[in-house]
Image (cartoon, rainbow, N blue to C red; front, top):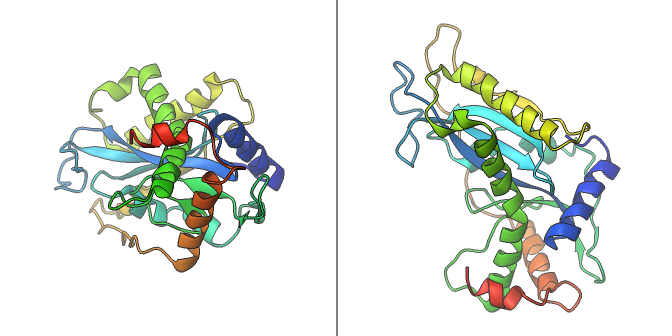
Length: 260
């Protein structure tokens, strides 16, 4: 996890160079890690894809390195709900991560905060962007969704590399969730190591507190809602305007956005 403004700025500069998305601090996504159903767990680990899993929630930089991971949430939990109850969300909401202050987007007069990009499973926040709803999209909003999807691919690529490198992800793990957490954490650390960046570190936030001391399962945490604030909508609209301006557009975006 970056510890200073300069470290965050270095990530943002790489996203701007590689994905044409300025002010981006990382891409966030969730991956279901298949497990065999734990005894007496009911449907807690049964996900919407119809298999049993624990969730790996990750923040990824422009080079597909994990900068934050949260491992072990119940498979039935939503990615957005897991994030809302994570240490990362708490730190971002309370400004504890030394994220750079808002500044103008390159070549424009539009002031914008630094943001994380994610898919529609997450709630829109001033520091977290997700796509516009697919209903009645304007051409400008369609272009924004395309530009966002390009930046989000780093998270999808990181999960793909993880699964290809470590075949343990190719079949349900016949282990208790606590053991699965350890294996997944080890794989994430090795993934970063194999990318040859000695300063990359994944922060482990286990979900073992979801189990009480006597082994009984506690109830799920509140999942939150997807109602966006006015300020969060304004941040997204500003990025949309920027990507449709001479300073923020790329020559291929109109053609590519029509394929979404």
